[in-house]
Length: 615
Image (tube, rainbow, N blue to C red; front, side, top):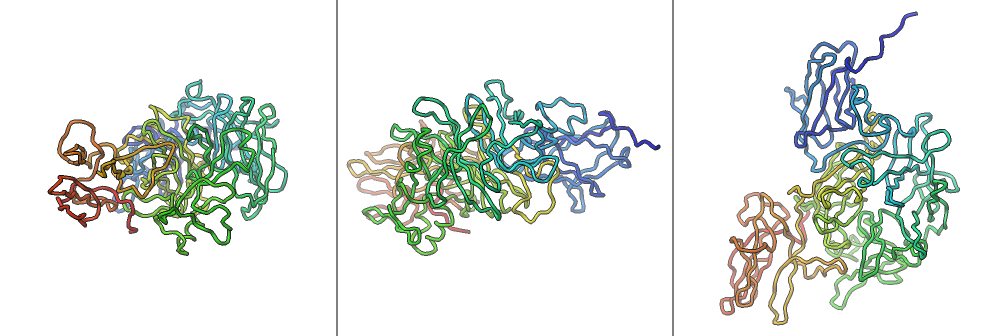
């Protein structure tokens, strides 16, 4: 009998560590492929443990690829790096990050720290190789309940068979400030398990096909008892919903119980990622996909009562589905308000109304544009939460059919949950790979919200890419984003107001309770200093507002691009200054036509347009 070679010990491996050149932290999901197509993928510590018989004790070339990172150049058009491979040796490869967000680690699946363990390293997870048998999980929802974080996922893979769990596995973790891991280190998931020790279904609702859930939130009932509630959908091929309802989590049984079902024709119901918003002294739940277009009072009783749900819409009350009627104010402008009994205006229905002439593009309440090009984004899914650092509502959003079908993630912010949402900056990109259903985790915010965390589902699904990344495909990957990065200095709205003497002034406004009227919106400008902008100050001269780029005591009113900037962003345009010679009054506008009695004083600076032209 011939025995094979002994299993390699930690000293037999050659260690390759791939790190972010900016943070010096290990990069997960970096592919290293040899000339004969043997592929290795860094684990969550950015490590590859290399021990390949026949390729030791010599120089070996690796093609290097990682989504959102710049690959090293190896000459003759090749992108990669060669190393002298020796048992017990090591090498470090630094990559320049192109993404604004930093990829941190994989949350779910097998072999999260596989290579680190082979090398004998200490790792932060209690179950670093296989946790409750979970090899892959789709789309996370989570919330804080009973002083812990409750996590639930969609369809999930197990080792024994291609068909795993299709009725919502779940887990809990401690909060970071109450014994849990720091979110920059990892997530120690404690799965709800069956008798076999594997993750179990927690929402096995009656009927064929998978169960999916959304709208997960913890709410107090009239007796101040906290309830964990969600909506559910039953799915049949080809991804068609045939039943909807509401469920409540039974803590003792570690699974959801059905509360009610409702007809598929019901226009409004809990879905998406909820957030709590206090408006005029009342607390509401807003449901985001990615924008908060549905709300209900934030009580357990109201959550279950679909008659209390409202949508933020421009449709008239009673508007028939086949012939939408638009609500207009006294001046003929399209008017949005909260109404019951009407469906949400999704992107498809809005596009249809624009194409038919019922709405103009500028009438749309929820829209985003690429900060750099002005291109309109097809917003698909995401979440919105309040951010203390920015003192604004921030959105992490997925773009549909961007440079990859479902792989581009954007950041945006607004003064109110309802907007105005205008400009967005891309923070994560993928090369023909999906990263869908992104979810920010506000319970992970650090430094008063300057650092935020989000994750999404990394998978080849919905692309034409047949090359599935080993261990990573169909799993959750965590990112962090530093909101102090000047590339995230997004323009904020600047409005024109008139005083009792009919004298105008410009300035940003913030309001949590009421969305400002877009007709008063003049332009957008940045609210913080960057290496590319200049401060614009304001003074009163003879009772009239005077804007100036000259150094001035006090806080700037806003920041803008210099008037003579040679490569100004395509989304900017000149801000003209006009002066009335007799009164000294000043007027500022982005159009060059002078008001009667005013003389053009030239361009003060460049600001961001309200209506970007499509490239």
